[in-house]
Length: 227
Length: 302
Image 1 (cartoon, rainbow over the protein chains, first blue to last red):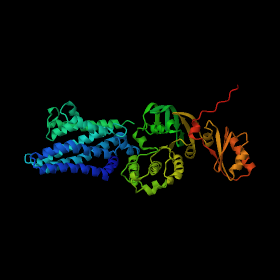
Image 2 (image 1 turned 120 degrees about the vertical axis):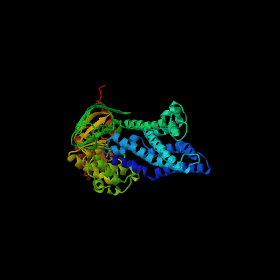
Image 3 (image 1 turned 180 degrees about the vertical axis):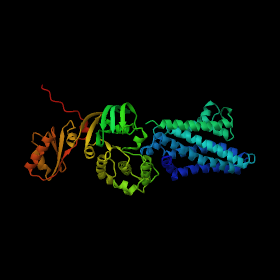
């Protein structure tokens, strides 16, 4: 049953357009990494990960993946095709969120590791450790953003809240005060070597990303359950 | 199978107020425009709209029960099918989700004459083809016991149009409850055995035969005759007292009167008198506008 519910979303993600868009953003991240390497920056990985991957590429990759999984519609609209055949709306919504989270993690973790490896500078931590840590952060960040945008897709008739949450993340996440605690951007920056919100530790930011993933997924599913 | 007891629902600007109806196995029509709430009623029965008050029972449960949901098929005018999948895979997916064995899609699609769409991707289908595929899925799903169809003959692939009515009646005779929401009395009489007329979200009339349908219009009943010489027929019928209004429409003459049998008899007399050859004679269902017209008031004495 779960496999059947996931089939439409995975088919949407396998279409050429989403693959090209996500591939384009990934190429941009790798381009930033190569540029950092070519300038010989001693903290090249930190710079490429924090300035390009975390701040720009990962949110946009997640935004594109969630949009593609939902066919550009709201979470309810994205699940409508399987609900029409008798699937329970909440179950269909859970599967859509899970597919989005899984697809984001599948892209973001290896991409983060690749960026860290390509941009690795002399003062960065050992390459293998740095790539593994980056993959872990990419995984957490990808999951949080996918869940965040899935929640956004429950706002508005056509899921326009997804764009609103992208802007909100950029606006609130740029700061270090209390509002930044509630968006993924500030915690991701903290884990990628930048300053955390309210001076939170890396561990606290990791826990915050997990919390954002879980809470946003629950909110998204509970909102899409209503007829 | 479907019981509505003082049901109220609202989806701005439409609303259903204190609706009480019940439908068992068979083909039933809910006649009314979109503004009258027919599609909203079907959405309610399908569990896609929220019930504000009253009691709604479908297959002995609520529309949200898992078992009821898989045995209910709702086909709106613009159905949503999973993009990026091939039509035959969509049919397999639907069978899997409904909990029935996956069968070859070709014969299921062939029931509506659209088996050629099987290998096509959903995003390549026209809205008419998509409507036909959704109808084919709903009408051939073995587990489905309640079929809710919004305007099933409108915006439909021409290959499927002629096959829908027999398939609907076949499913109804197998014990399914088929509920059709339509603004066309012609479609209602073709698809269903009984009819309720919705107006402004309330049931205003009901009928069980085409004659009942024809008499639903407050403006009276209409009889249409296609004849070899419509002008001669028009001239012969024009002065009959049973006919209140008469007009020629291409090869047809349409006569209106207060009583359907009297108008039919008058047209019969005119056919005999004029000696024209009759190609077709049929009752003309009223249009939605005629159904919405207020009933004629008796004239007052000065």
